[in-house]
Image 1 (cartoon, helix red, strand yellow):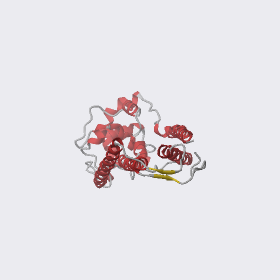
Image 2 (cartoon, helix red, strand yellow):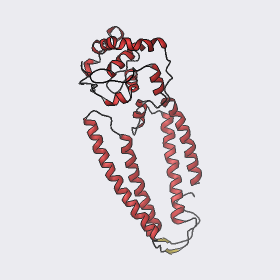
Image 3 (cartoon, helix red, strand yellow):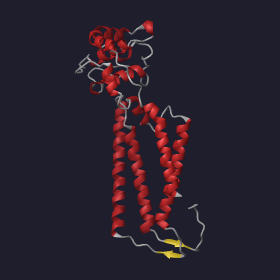
Image 4 (tube, rainbow, N blue to C red):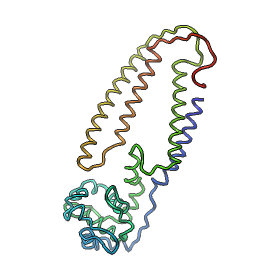
Length: 285
């Protein structure tokens, strides 16, 4: 039964990945040659105009109102000399189209050529300089990877847009995995049959070494977790995205190493006692 539960959990995990796949696979970008040809000519003038004044007729507000006329930041993040956007120019296009946090999405307000004009103006102003203009071809190439906004969403403990089928499957997967792991642990520590009497255990050198290594790993992950929390707090102060996924990883490893230490203690260091021989037990396996 434990193995059946784990296999069922694995199957449901695959189904869950298919549900998420629709969100992680961005829509393909159509490369328009006319747009590509006009980008280099338009961004110095049209991009600057939209950044500083917006397009009121299309319901697009000025970017400078939040980011400053010189990209110095304000209500919005600082854009001048931003190494992050220079390393990933496609990210600028993604944020302009889809929005992020308090920043609205302009994909429905600005025309495609206006989006590229603003993006290239940001990428080539106030000390920023990219090797080549951002074009639909570069955006299409960048979208072969998972969208950065989706990665941010996946890094949270509870994604904002999680739906009922995903909640059901994720919960049932955790229940099945817990059921299966407890069953395997029970068989490992107590065996398939219980025999009456007091059972003395003697720790082997390998068991002792495993316990020491597990406790050291638990301590190491605890230190790494505290350091990551401190780094993420500093990131929040600088209006940068914290590495929540790494926090979760270190926290999970702390719990896992502690669980392994408890299991080793139960198996190799704790005497057991069986009063009567009985075919029934606390668990259905």
